[in-house]
Amino acid sequence: MSFESYSADPNYLRQVQYRTADNLNARIQIHKRFNTSTQTWEEFIFAHLPDLGGKRLLALGCGNATQWRANRQRFAPDAAIVLTDLSEGMLAEAGADLEGDGRFTLLCMDASRLEFEDESFNFVTANHMLYHVPDIAQTLSEVARVLKPDGGLMAATNGADYMLDLDSLLTEFWPAYGGLHTMSLKFNLENGADQLKAWFGQVEKILYASDLWVMEAQPLVDYVFSTPRVQQMILLEQKEPMREFFQSRIDQSGGILIRKETGLFLASHPKKA
Image 1: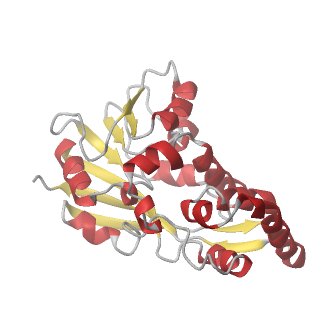
Image 2 (image 1 turned 120 degrees about the horizontal axis):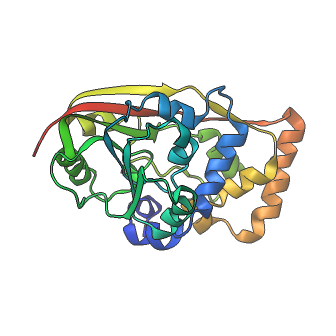
């Protein structure tokens, strides 16, 4: 299987990459700790969600529900939030934290075959996940089907040049690497709008202004070894040499700058198939 295929293979995603929340947590932590923005990603997401008072929201590919857990106190008491993911392991971590909160329902579900009635949700989120589905158009048709006529979609993703500074460093450390670690090429900030416009009458792109200034080597190593390409190409025995490589760069400059390119699309006026 090619490296590009890993990001959209359901069995790989469910059984390997996202069997548990460990890989995702390694990636979340580096963004939390070394973010250059004064606004956290979770705050950015919440700022672009509608008021959920009396509304139903469906979250596709929610992972371990970090965004929902972080904003838990901000949601209306009568909101109904259905969190879904392909991986039971990912939902297990989310469920442990959200247990007892009647606003949340957690379901293991394939985003391309939604088990809901037509026009049953006011809003859908698909954050950093559409590039994982085998057929994006099929998934978007399902999103449009379950949305009410005045409903909307939020779809977060990365840009084509997402964290290229890190890929350059990895290629310098391990010349055979020579590629991109990002999994978001199928649906990114450059090509996502056109894909959404096939299913929505209005699409807006909003960028999240943030980079990484990494001042510790080990979290960066943990991040790197959470990604499929690195897991396949670089031996685990290289973790310590890689840590020393990153640390030398940090010692020279005080940190490692990694430019990100991240944002989201807001889509409205769903088109029915």
